[in-house]
Image 1: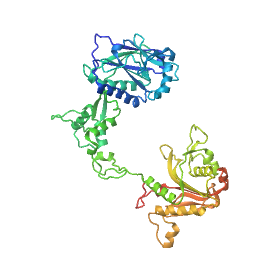
Image 2 (image 1 turned 60 degrees about the horizontal axis):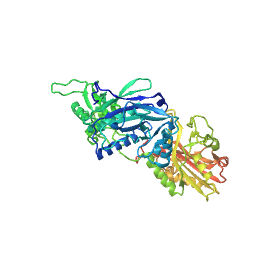
Image 3 (image 1 turned 45 degrees about the horizontal axis):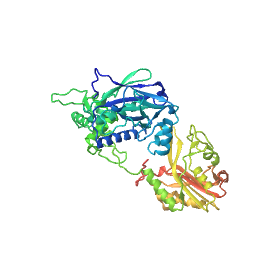
Image 4 (image 1 turned 180 degrees about the horizontal axis):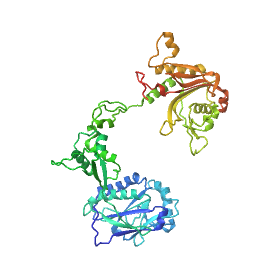
Length: 543
């Protein structure tokens, strides 16, 4: 709670207009009569370090300074001055530094503080906090002054948080005072400080009021499947998580709350110690933690993406999943292994390519409806998301043409295709490309790789079924037919069809394409879509 300051003057922090140029906000508080020992002191410093690392984003959003109030005198001023106008003895130093020289010193000699120097290094003015005697308290967000350093003998602690984000500053200040006010002479009592901003407006910090949230009881029950748990028990669970709550429903004669009406809500008081509670789902999460995740009701059917078929209406909102590899990745790994065993070397290339590589160099037309274009590309090499793996594979061959022949490469990765049916307007498609480069085209090698991959996937050739007099089963079949892809040599290419649709193409690369990629040898290539082959042992699709 805030200390009763009726009839007593508040300490003041006066903010100068120049601070708007570098770090405009500051909030403050005072802890009185603190009793510190080594463990508490170390915990106090550790808390500041942890807050600086996460909430404060390495001090870029907020910097916390703590000072021995007995060594300084208010009112305090928060100013922004040229670096050479700020001179003081910093913490853990014996001599006085100008602010600019101090930052250079840290860049050269201090591994811990050098990473914070760029935050203000190039600013025309540096933020600084003075007391009434013009003693420097701190040069935020870098270092405090040695004059006001806290020790084990410190009894009154002045806390200031300078920031570029006022909300984060309030949260950081609240966290520090709530954690350590228990060691004050009046436990859990915090003395407020009045902050006067550049426009003359006054505000008193810290703000320790509880926030009130209304959360639908039905939402919590259905999200967690706790339809049979009495509302009073849910209130008890929330209290375990430091959330004081009541319901909008009236209690019955036994003091029980029904909470079953559609509009019934929890009125939750969120204390300043729970800055992480922002949304109704955070309240539901706290209920789940207090109830125990392992105790939550589970759907009757388990499996990836499956949900319960129970008559419990809440169970339809729950999905029990098993942690396991995605079916698409399982198929991809199996195909990688087969390509490697066939003597092909895997490559990994960029997903972004130039328009020329994706279209012109493959002799393929750009209809404007296929490739996702980068709005503001950093370089001409990264203009579009690739719509084919072939250009990347050929580019790799061209960069390695001095290597011993034959060169056998493959890549199994995603391409990106425009798709108006998708919410984001595009979709990923997993593909496999394999290329053979040698003194001869190696067409039979690529053809043999295709047959082997289909054998591994359990998809028979259409002619093999006919020769054996078998009907086409659930696995379907594959075959090839003449194609006219401009990237391949006419009459030496074919489209691959499997399970009733076209899934890829293979053949000898067109000499003009080889020339554009600066490849002086003959090449053959295969590119297929892997996704139609992601099925289970019963040949049911898993995508």
